[in-house]
Length: 100
Image (cartoon, rainbow, N blue to C red):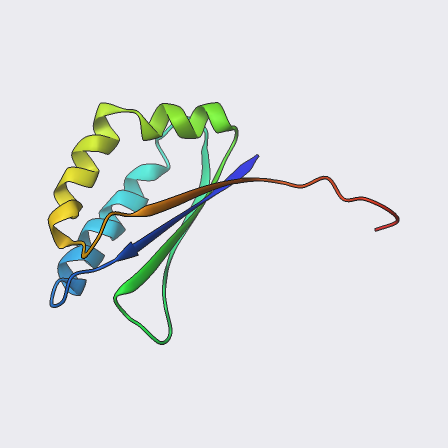
């Protein structure tokens, strides 16, 4: 399994529009092959800073979705609502060392 962190900064006065789009995207995500779970979080001190945490079965599943036409269409709908490009970090689970 892998985790993907997507950071977005919402343009001023676009929060409610973004939230509606994000809710719909998370509802549809359960149908994506390899998607396990996801959540959308709002920075406590900056409500325009959003973080999406998602869990995927594999890196291949994530990149298949990332490169898909469907994702490009979805991101093109929210891009005008963003202050800057989203930042994506793909994380794999680290193998514990020592006696943990």
